[in-house]
Length: 277
Image (cartoon, rainbow, N blue to C red):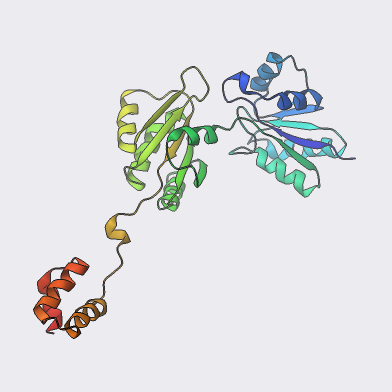
């Protein structure tokens, strides 16, 4: 009989945020698959849990994924954790989940902390619809393409970023997305937690003077088209139809041109010339 893969959310800073259910699953699992075994060992030791640890991260996920899968197929239960927060989000765990699903193995999520959700709810930006975009690529062209692909999304956008890349990312956001509202959220649930609700340009100015420290979540305002972009195009046919309707109702051409120009917010002379062309 197959075992089970549990996706166990762990604290993103404050250890008190771990759930009772998460602790119970960690205690009953046969082994724990972790992104950084040293980091996870500290967590387990804090709660007096002793379990075998298996390293599972981006650069060994193919080999270790097969190893973990074989153990679960042989009846063992695995608890998958990431360094902080919910596994399988911007994390190699998503590949293990896919492998287990393909093999018919039961995968059970154990809810808990998730950095981008916490950042979103404190951002002050709309939460009804949002797009979580994870980390931007470090490759210049891929990064540019990614930003251009999300530039006109009308809903809130969320990114993760490391401190040494933050200033470059803010510059790219300003160049591609423009100067929008942004919440720069760092060190969630930790001693130096900070939520900076500002604009992209002001955030850039701030962090150019205050060196970025800690892990960041960027919550960015969705695209809001300018009035000129949302206004419907006005054709000559539309102008003539409006003016001729006024003339048919008994208005002079001069007055009809004036009324039509005001209606479409156009120069009066251009409408008058169109009527006489």
